[in-house]
Amino acid sequence: MTFAPSMPPAAGRAVVVAFIASLLAPAAFAASAPGPSSSGAAPTSAGDPTKAVVGVHALVPPEARSARTLGTERDGSGILIRDDNLIVTIGYLLMEAHTVEVIAADGRRIPATIVAYDAESGFGLVRPVRALEASPVRLGDSDALKTADQVIALSRAGGQALASAARVMSRRTFAGYWEYLLDNAIFTAPPHPTFGGAALLAEDGSLVGVGSLFVNDSAEAETFSPGNMFVPINDLKPILAELAAHGGRSSPPKPWLGVYSAETQGRIVVTRVADDSPAKSAGLRAGDTIVGIDGRKVQSLADLYRRAWALGPAGVDIPLDVLKASGDEAKIERVMIRSIDRSKWLRTHKGF
Image: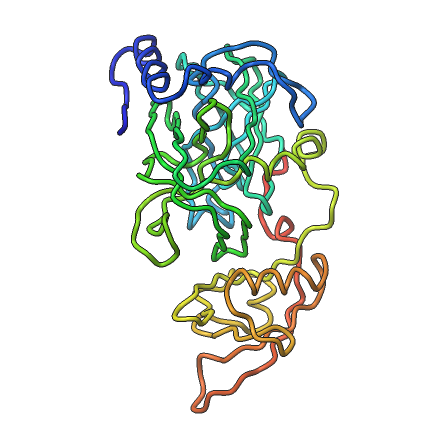
């Protein structure tokens, strides 16, 4: 069930609010009610969650590392979460961006600054230069969300409001091919089309996730069931204060290799190697199969990442056991890769 308003903005907002209210319990608009916040700045008044969800428009220079895969013009959504105008979104919208603006519910396009991009969690933070006429959405408890729970996905990509009802299909580990791992990702269905940075609202109207991906296996891994993957909001809570204050984590960064991999019939196959990356320098290439780390077999992408990260922070040597793509006889080789901090590889705009 979806609704995309095509009427004038004011009427459209009213219909979206009515749509959400019809799906949620009467307590729905506790989404913006006063309450404690892990960020330090708590919401102060009740309000309309459709106003707190904004559009996010980012421009990325063509020379950016991510331009080829994510494009140079990116549109998604963001959610106002604090009284100091702080907005959370999905990080890939902001990655290497040099210009960002938010699109308010009333259509205003407001320049914004990038507060933080956190590759480890996948979250990004922005702050518009002028205040929004909206109350923040309260952060909920994503750990309490379970399979079959009803949720609402709410987005404003490109300024167009879109709300859809969904169910939680599963809670499980998500391992991304770009060296990314979530221990308890939220999978929902049916799919919300403008998922990037979309708000996932629980039955009490609180924010429990931020939209990341369209997936084909929302119910169970490798079982066809189209839906979305949302990053749990509880992953943001422990790091929100330092991201907002300092633009990054205080803990050492995880080691990054620059390997894009896929699980294929129980094997971890390299699909691509990032240019100018540690893996490229070490001679890894597409078609190679990663079978272990330091003599210990790896069972999955998640296992690969956990074992690599357990060796130490960025800068540590990662001894991969690799079945090379070329050669007449199958032979496992030890490939030693000196890891780096992923943020040092990205071509981040110096103005942020």
